[in-house]
Amino acid sequence: MADYLASMYQVRYATEADMPGLCEINYASFKKYRFRSAVFPESDPATLKDFKALNGMKQIANPEMHIVTVSDSTTGHVVAYARWFIPEILGVPPHTCNLSERGAAQVAAAESPLIHAPRPMNEGLFFAPRKLLAGARKRHTIARDIVLDFLATLHTHRGRGIGSALLQWGIKIADSLHTRIYLEATYAGLPLYRRYGWEILEELVLDLEPHGEYGKEVFIIMLREPLSIDYPQT
Image 1 (cartoon, one colour):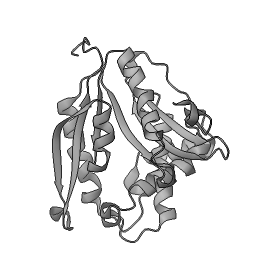
Image 2 (image 1 turned 90 degrees about the vertical axis):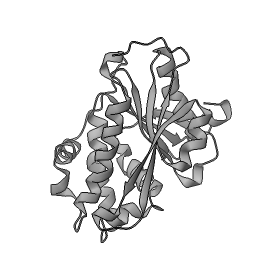
Image 3 (image 1 turned 180 degrees about the vertical axis):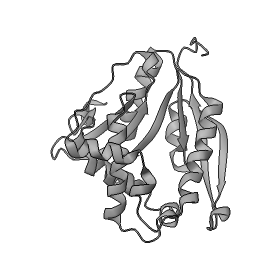
Image 4 (image 1 turned 180 degrees about the horizontal axis):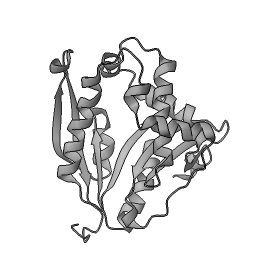
């Protein structure tokens, strides 16, 4: 992170206490997409954020998922975060987070998302992109690949290099280990990812009509090779 950013922001691992802020960022990042309202047509923001917190806590508890935040140095509020899946075989020390009883209960609840999901819910549409992206991930990744699972910045803090700082966190690890980084992007993220060396592998189109909606959702599958491409093909 540049010196001027370092004086304003702090890059650190997420904690359980950060979950409300993470859910707010996650919710805000998809606010303009109608996909969410199509899946949960009658849910209010608070209910959806509570549901997101279940999966968020599951990710924090996963030793292979490194959730890195950027927080405002003055207020301590999280303004951006990224989820990096770093396979255990790479030898990167896991970030352990001691969860409260409530946090542990949320992790357990995340194992049965349909039980705890807001209703009414379009279940077919909920799972459709997950199945589509899982297939692409299986086709394009190998065991050593790092995956950038999520990255978002609050609108009020965009354009300040925060997204770049989060990318550089993972790129530094990937290049030091001579491994690749895979991600699934929207069109909005393409300029930033291309700037840091990601190339498009394919575009996936999800037709919403079979699930009772209209329109399409597009996902861009991207891969970044390390500075040295001498890595095991396993």
